[in-house]
Amino acid sequence: MSWDVYVQDIPRDASTPGDIPDDFQPVGLGLAHEDVIAAARQVGGTVDASDPAWATWQGAGYDIELNLGDEPVDSFAIHCRGDADACRGAAQGLIEALGVRAFVVEDGDIIG
Image (cartoon, rainbow, N blue to C red; front, side, top):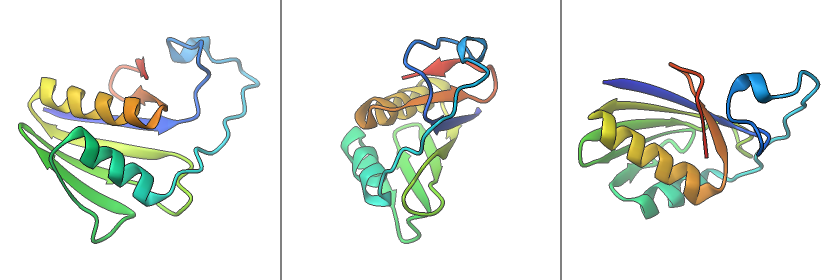
């Protein structure tokens, strides 16, 4: 299974992309690479942050790439391969640990 999630500023009351007002202007998350990497390690598994802009995260049943880009991290992508439940659990754990929200690219669901 392959699953992609895009993390960014999303209004707290939005459950779907259609709930986001047309005039909504997202603000950057303002996270350091290490904030995201530390949260992934807290969720579990092993994180290779030798390239902190494109870290890899592996755990039981999942292999994730964290496309963090430049610092500060204003938005980022989670690219997960592996067991569906393991991918969802790891991604959701990271999103909750950071207190952020995200779009599931495949279906538009908003999580977090």
